[in-house]
Image 1: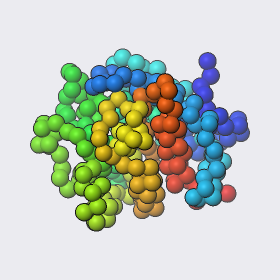
Image 2: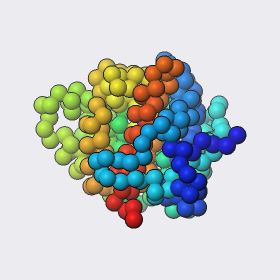
Image 3: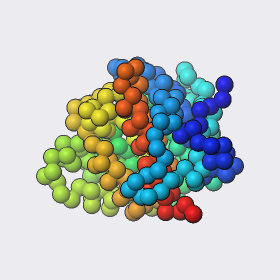
Length: 290
């Protein structure tokens, strides 16, 4: 069975050799803390992408013309350790071929292999990881694994500086290891009282930035389809403003979008995820399209 191409783009824009962007689906789910189904997330995003307009009003652009190829999905479905190795290997191959990798999950554990690949590739090149999420994910171990989705940012912090945005939930264990000057809690950035938090955020970013987005960072009113929804959260245009500014001030080298848990009768969150992916590509590449 052939992999559905993001946006159902014509072959000329989905050809691997010509594409600047390669999307890697990673339909992995293990030890979800509550709602199951994130392994169906990548296919749901690809399906929704075929039902969106590919012209972007705000930038007057069609970023798909840069070329977006969707690769065959990662097949590992059971072992965290094997998953990390396979994702790391696949991403390194793409980086060596000068592609811009985008990972769609799956639960957040799929990000660990990608971050390992980027940290190795950009070693000593001013690299950091920017997390948008409702959960800190800083546990050292969860359910017997140090590669669980609850541990993703603990593993990332071993490889590169980490900046966390939108966090609204954590354990006491995590509260003892969090870096207070590198975390921007949801209640502080959403109540309007902190006027300088975004300035502080940009001062902590490096030249090269990898972005990991757990869709639970959004308010459940617009993103109910996650495995671990949390009250509060970002709205659509708040997120776009931040991503646009990050793109202006840094070099985004890759990103992932994870945590979509599709609902049978509500497709809006799936379209949001697909448009978020496309919008972030627009911020990255719209200026370079000829």
